[in-house]
Image (cartoon, rainbow, N blue to C red; front, side, top):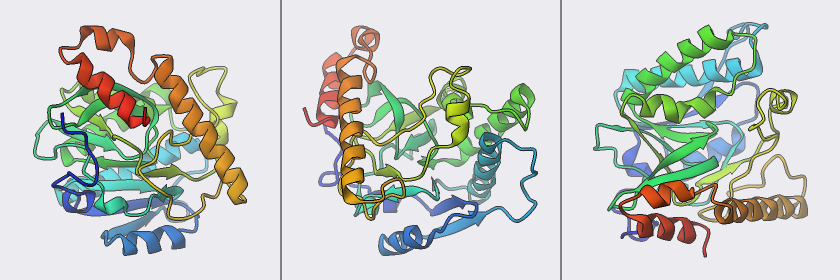
Length: 282
């Protein structure tokens, strides 16, 4: 099996996407923009104007509306795009890393570049990993998926309303899979969630027990381009990264990344196990 990495991939992230959309509100995007320029990625900062997001919207619903704005841009362009939130911190050389999915497949919907609570379902002969993740910090999305995700946004509005909290990002993979579309997780993360967690996560943990108040990349492709905002110094950063690595290894050992049921029912169990072990450097 070909294990995806920057050395043997014939199609890089830069080759595969038409444009990068950075979703921002009031965040300073100067550093991120300079990195995207250095990576030679064509990008656009999407900011909501004053009053564009009503005051009664919950933070989670406002975030969803921000992503809807980017999805409409993807539909209009008719090409796959990279969407990232303003607190994403890329690794150096991100654009030269391999595209984590096959964009020529009509069923390809979305590929996370940053994963949270990822699960592995299947590994193709080409080395692409179908799976599950939450968080919309950074992902590649196709026009067909963007159309479907706007339907999901409307369903979220009807089910939860505009002012109530909803973990809508955890519903993306299942929603797209129900439409026979495929979602992919990367071999390793292309960057880190560098911001402070949404306080709504902690406030709603009694209602949504699967919520984590903090999430970080368990395994990175390389060194981050700059120090994330969550770390005030290099020691705090290293402590956070160590915790993330240990948590990733723990999820692997406990069968949360690759569930035993998935391995037992797979026609290619060794391919799954090999991907999971190599992802963590085991």
